[in-house]
Amino acid sequence: MARPFRGDFSGALPVKQQVVIDKSYLQGATPADVRQLCANGALMTDTLFAELLTTSEESRKRCFAKFPATLNPVEMIPSIGDLMRYEASYSRPCTPIHECRLQARFKFQPGIAAGTYEFTESELGVVRAVEGETRERVAQFAQAAAVVSSWFPELQGFPANGPPSLIDAAMARIATDPERVRSIYAQIVGGMNQMIRDGAVAPPADWAPPPRPEDVDEGWVWYRFVQVDLLAAVEFVHKHGAGTTGDLCEQLEHDVMDAEYVVAATLSSGLASRDTTMQSFFRRLCPNGLLVV
Image: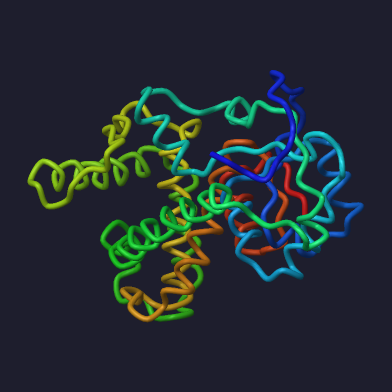
């Protein structure tokens, strides 16, 4: 996948603390904070890369200017969709996630921070690929948010900003009950496979069946993907009420993008974010992980 990097592919890179940076942290932190974090080890997903390329020019310049002007200023990892396809194809987890990083010596093009760099068609293909995945994920997330009360009956008819105790109890189960998460995962995967068998949907060209429910655990992207989506769906119900998704596409897209960062962060046990909801999700799922705010 082409990106505006320059450098030669020269083998493995040293492994440091894998802290996933999100857009809120990059926008709010000082250049010194970002550079110190990168010096201690940091991960940047294709999702963040795409977000930065599609933000305003001034915001993009400010964000890229905060990275150190050195070789490998940050470790690059694929999108969650790419990692899930890997697990489905090879029937093994992507962890340790640092092994999925771009194996290259690179620098960001200086023109990005200066606002003079012209992105090529192949580089913009990265953005289109991530945006396409996001649209698919928005549709999936909308379905999950609409039916989450079937998995957590106590949330049926839940009003917007209703009793937080019910929300907290549901989130606690998601964070601490692996069998419950695997059970929901099995329902989701079973439904997906059935639709393909029935011809209701056509599988993608690179389709591989998802991992078996009995195989996945906290070390798999598929497991963390379902776990984080459930937390996000419950939080969505808390804010907007049960069954409400119709006219909230922009909010859904924001929630989906945030969920991708948390999934990657749970697999690296580190997150740098200034978004309080993401911080809360990460603390629930990785109580002993490194959180940088």
